[in-house]
Length: 110
Image (cartoon, rainbow, N blue to C red; front, side, top):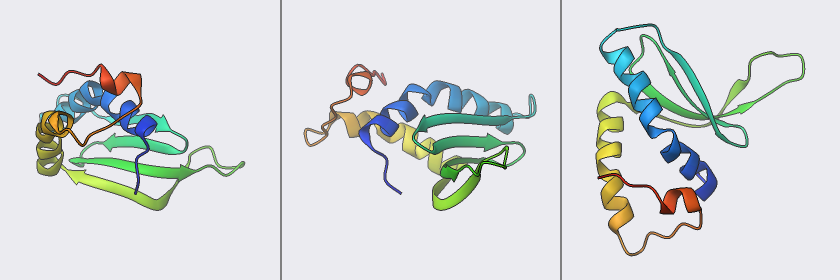
């Protein structure tokens, strides 16, 4: 799976909400059925009681109300997602990182 700079920006833009929904799953404070569009046919989904963050491409068939996931996806376990989020500041500090999206340029992880 490849995230374009625009999809990456939307993922980062929604990071706080994704983490809040994941906390609701972990602490069982409420049922979660979360889905956020990050570009083209790509969505981030979280659903109780599973402790996974899924990023998947969906295809929508005209007669189908709900999209069908394609094989183009990645799922993070709770530990993997926590590690990924912890690495974000390091990713942005690296001189090799380049992104033309203004939203990503303005992000702060401190």
